[in-house]
Length: 230
Image (cartoon, rainbow, N blue to C red; front, side, top):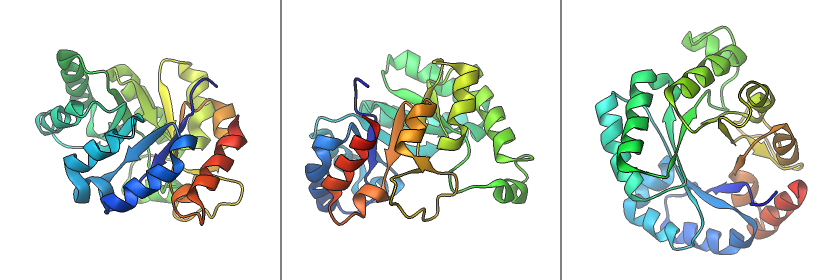
């Protein structure tokens, strides 16, 4: 393992809290993930503050709208030069392909990731929303759309990593939330595995939030998680 695959999800609305946390855990993580909670409170200026840590950024806003609106939003995201950003694959191939076209036009190095099925979903959630017969079937279909549309990778739960890796090899980067340490509480995540299991199955990036950020000693928690996978 040449690079640390752990991206810590900084889910806070307070920039000082975020800065203090990253200062503690920086030696033990490979990148910073900024989602909706952070972005809607701290905005673009907050993202620039996080860039000062000189760690790769993952801006995770899960864009899902008409193609023109998503492309307009992506221009702002690309200007921040994150390593990764996300789109909902369920937005459709037209939206995805226009996003890829924009990336190529702007010569952006940001990896476009397609979100398959959120890790808070299970088969009952899929049935309720009429998305398909099962999580497994839905993830397979959405991953196929992502690949055909030219995305760089997908976001999936650790439980789908092995099957996707067997089908696509290294054609898609696999970014995996729902990671829990051996002593973690699962919380609202339903399709989880340990960091070591996810890496062994073929995950490229592990997104870890509460097992680090809610720990009594975040730095130690991050260090322990890193030790699990090296």
